[in-house]
Length: 292
Image (tube, rainbow, N blue to C red; front, side, top):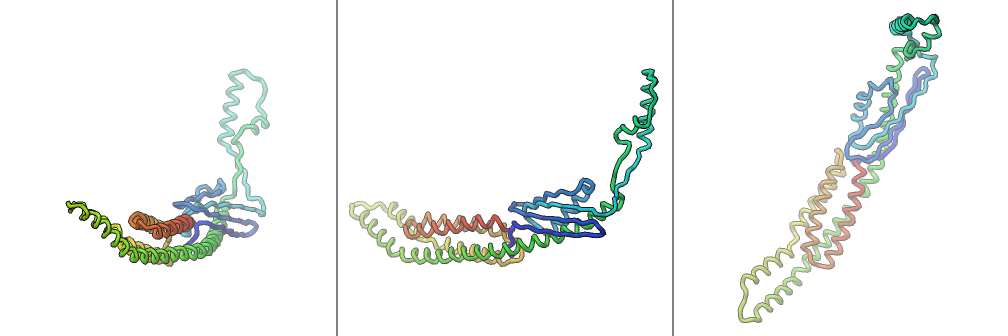
């Protein structure tokens, strides 16, 4: 099954005043690239997030946007760092003593010291958030894959039609090659006749001309291989595995065969069809960049 690498998905999950929205967007990429915006307090969950994505997506540049809304009673906790406060106080008293400062140390002075108070989330808040994020992410990825599969079906239809067009052109090339045989045979006879006009015949040159002409006429092997590549190409589009890499390889092989046919054909009509086949192959190559 052909799957596009471009798509969008949105998932939502909520529980007791805590709601999460996850949006996923994917673009073309040779490998799987994941960029997310987990809250700082959930940074340790990044590997878990990547694992969820890898179970559903194999290729593409994936962008994940996470929005969290908390309408619950404040879960923020304030903690006093007693140890740090005592150390600051002792240091201030030592400075006061050494510099003989008479001014007393007041509470307001201690409250201005950084890191004495720290604000954090309740212990279970991050776990609750992650549970909703993972749920919303799964929904978002499923919707993303639905869109990718729908677009993939359209791409597969286009790719199939184009290769069928190539297949018809290969039939034309084969027919032209068959029709050229008597024409080229006559041309060879005329060239040999010119060689016999002189009293001395260059046997080596004569043999070389025959071999070269026969080689140029025969493009049957290239046509057979081209048909084989087309067959596997169609099978790859219908298969269950990711078709992108397989089709890409087959396109390279088809390019090689059609180039050989063009160079061996030495015929205006065949050359014209070869150009059309190359154009179709190039359009297919561009489309293949979009499939997984």
